[in-house]
Image (tube, rainbow, N blue to C red; front, side, top):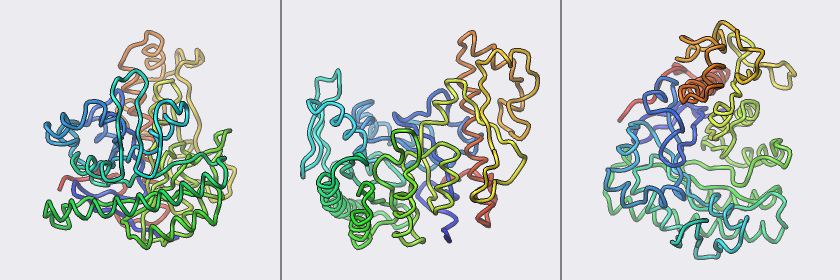
Length: 379
């Protein structure tokens, strides 16, 4: 499937495919913006649901938006918060409710109730200075009944239209030139039902968006990709539109989805794995296995394992990150055992660099014309 090689957004260029770490509350845990730049991270994902609570929208806007607050001059995608609110309410209906007007929820331990309508979600994301704004959607579980999936698609379509109207109103009000306007992505719901996925995709394509996200949790209960649904959803969206595989971050899953035609990936998995001493290592200097190959192209190194207590040399001979350039595995093992914060930083840097090397290899595989190690530049 032919794909566009890059996205141009107000704060720079994103070469595709791209992996975006989750900076849920405005920070990628244990690393700073300079670390992210050194890893060739091009953009990050921040979360409206969490940010509207902490530090709060008034604080963010008073600081000049997310870029200024976080010291990150490169692109930011803001997730709408629909998935997080849905998860909160699904786990405990007493926390809130979802209706045609939007979401109402009260997080655990909070005395305050929050309301998130489609228009409000767009207003917040635009006020935060996001480069890619995501429509509020009605998320479901893949195993939910047909009736629930139908209702979700109907509501997601209606909310997307309201999001588009509010977005256009704000752009007209702000009088931003096209190059300064964020992109607007719709989210395709429908569970595992192909008919509902197509119904949702067709309606969103008719409404008109700059790109689309795969809505709903992309994994089954055993952690396996919903390959059939992901593949079908990509097929029914014309290839000129970038698609975001929301929540996909396992290296093998990124490879598989990229070959389906998805071009944006985000997940907390690589950084979470790093904190728990699970580090990613390529088994070969370059390239990726052929489609359908059973070749082991990457492996895990567990730094907490006593087998590495005296292991000299870097985590990976094929990695150029700060951790691999300067420190032996045995030292990382030592840092982990004494619970020193430097371990968290170095391990996170390594896994993030692995992910940017992976997407660079994918760009090479897809014959992208641009240099694969280029970091996004500021506009």
